[in-house]
Image 1 (cartoon, protein in one colour):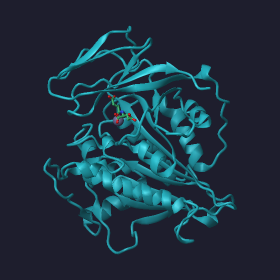
Image 2 (tube, helix red, strand yellow):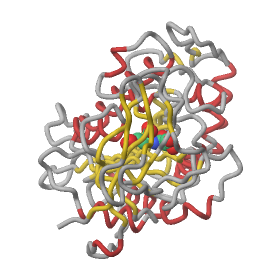
Image 3 (cartoon, protein in one colour):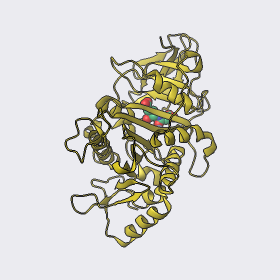
Image 4 (cartoon, rainbow, N blue to C red):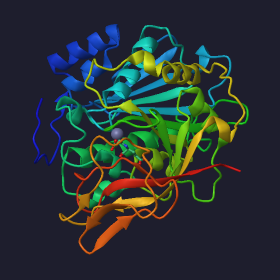
Length: 385
Ligand SMILES: O=C(O)CCC(=O)N[C@@H](CCC(=O)O)C(=O)O
Ligand SMILES: [Zn+2]
């Protein structure tokens, strides 16, 4: 497993390599996608124009596009009702956030074991295999700041390369499902009015404890209204604390939302733990509902009521500007802790941050980010009309 910080081009394994062939065959039999992903962390070379790494399961075509990137498409003859959704389920954008990777593993292995019949095209992603292998959030750059082309602004490293590749896979996937697909073979929509709805759930876990264990960031929607049905879907998944994003960003969920009008969320499912130490029963509602979405099973949702949620409006970021940045929030303080008005939270070269609003609360405080990056997200409670 090559692993160096000065990577200028990834070291790709040839798919005719004996080790790869063996590992791929084992994956087809056992569905252990984490193992395959970790063995070939930087990716592999495809031969020829067509994707040769595919096989059929239960009427679906399974295509391995890259390390940690698996496309599953229902074959049109295998489903009476036509596909109307394109679904991206991503995990491991931060390599040490293992619970989401294990959720994706579970869904994939259930599909391969024919426990989940696939009705809607689904793209599964384990985002940063190099960081997974070193049990770190990232190797060189925070991958979840590099989407929407921001990868073009940084020096060569694995995350720069990977962000560009992931953007391409997701773009190709949503484009293939779109009504305006360029040909009958690339247009995934076969339903009568040819409408396909896009979804992207980017699963994460948080560095510190949170007053509300599970929560989601709903990417900034510009003039579009917040979708209440999506909020109730999140609640059905066990996530009833929602932060409404305040502006464009370089996150993966914002990319799918802004570029492909996907219903998209960054979902935080609890605290970061090493592989094998997650209580998977804690994510059952999320796994079951994602599985139901993929199968096309009916999902019964409550109608939206503010009382069922903890909703927060993002006031803005505290950005670390210089090496002088000081944060007065201890490591033991939980996300969503609120502070009285006029509390000093940070100082930096020529600047300080004091709370200004009742109920002002902190999310993701992290003094170790690079200069120019978000060190804290400031939120206040809100309701939807
Ligand atoms: O716990 C933390 O400090 C970070 C957890 C995490 O990775 N959160 C995402 C949120 C993305 C967003 O703001 O939409 C991130 O920081 O990338
Ligand atoms: Zn994360």
